[in-house]
Image 1 (cartoon, rainbow, N blue to C red):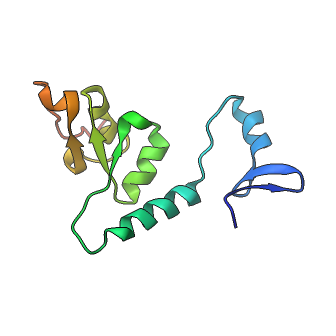
Image 2 (cartoon, rainbow, N blue to C red; image 1 turned 30 degrees about the horizontal axis):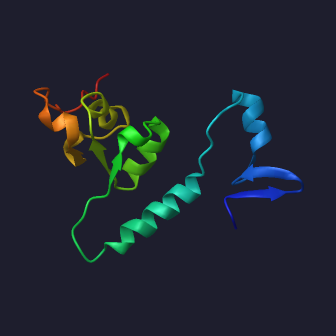
Length: 119
């Protein structure tokens, strides 16, 4: 079953009518399918099952905390390209140890420190 579909003349994401989301949060808004994201991540991850690997999500591409938490829970790391995006792993509930740093972040003197779990 597609995760985004028309049913009885109404557009749904999974089992939720998008009209209800728009009424609750207003528009424009971004809607992601949890099921689609998990399925696609697992499919991509399994393609590399024969070799040691880390799939690192580019935080700069989309720093939505719910999305980052979902991917972290699936085993993704974080690709950090700037000092500002280095706070993403902490905010999404994981450690920067599963993160890679490149670009301007690798040329800065600011270091990534373990997350303070008390805040």
